[in-house]
Length: 493
Image (cartoon, rainbow, N blue to C red; front, side, top):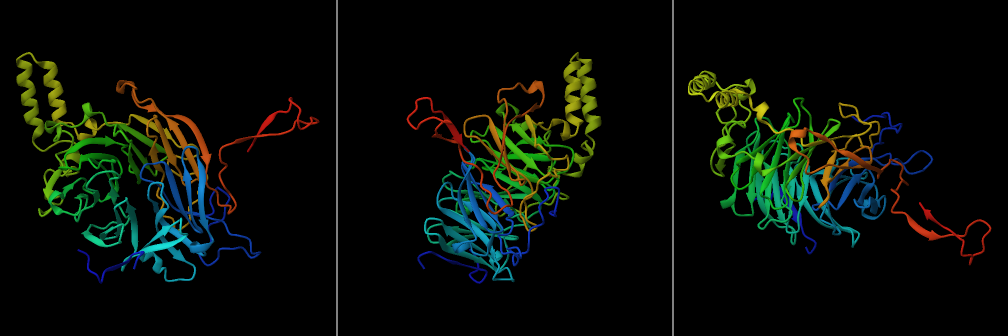
């Protein structure tokens, strides 16, 4: 349980420069208006999809905005007024389509930035903050569902009940500067995944009871991204290297998939499961978004664990986590990086010679190669890719709407609930929509996603607002009388 001196809760009852975009760098919090008194430019500080991917919300240097995806439209804006007068929203997450938002804000009236050490619950219906969670340390992330809310600091995670904001768990983690923590949207009991106390370890917390909780080693280097499917049965992980994404069972830490994003390192900004768990989307700091097919026929079986890079080390909550140097089964141990297990080559070749002598030459060669080749050649490749327009290979976009203090590392992704559509939310202020062929044969290689549309949802101009759906209104054709049957209709944009 959390130390009451460490945090407190109060319930409701009780590279960013001027850039090629041509926009000046965002002003300091104390300089929100120009010398002429006109509103200053507004910049992005954070953004995220809601739990069912029907909406997304962005925190800005002036407040926050809420958007629907289909169609793309701004439905709420709370900036420079009321509770957000002279406030910037550094982090924000919304609860499905409700009026509840969890925010981390800074105020122009507080140069010490004490607001970074607390989470404020905003009720949009009441237009005010109705609750607050406090910590001695800076808040790095916040996640919520209908029954609990988790406040993430660099070395600890505090779990509260949503009704009374009462702390029920205090979890200690390894260094977690990105505020990694994910909650299942619909499982009962709730399932939370976060970094463990050892580098590259994942902790699976199943409800408040420790009986169903365990820790397993996923990577040698620190975690960079996590994702849970809606039911909480699968967790996807990526490390700081960003070349390989792994999918595990949350029930026992069993490794199911090793997914090869690229041989080049990149910062993974988002992992997301499609609602039916058939596909996994991966976004990074590069210009390419990857989609992987999680076909059950390609999942690792118990006998394939060593071939795929060693079985994931699973342990009870009380068991120690071995470091990569101590753990011979570590997925990223040195023998796997070299491509061959020590002493395995001679043994596999002897087996091959024996099989050749008995006439089983084809299987002999296949088994020998499979036994000694590095895991790189056994990793699953992308099922489909989407190259973000107007972005160079290094991930630099021609338009960058981020503030200098932004917590945005790269794009965020969301799948359509039923259609083969992927949405790419980009810090250029554009939402891309692309389609892919879900029944494409794997033997045909990686498919290129078809570009469907791009909608500019954000610009730094304070008065900018994305155009909503077109509405048809009756008008009078030139020279026609009001009751003339030949009058035409036109669309009001």
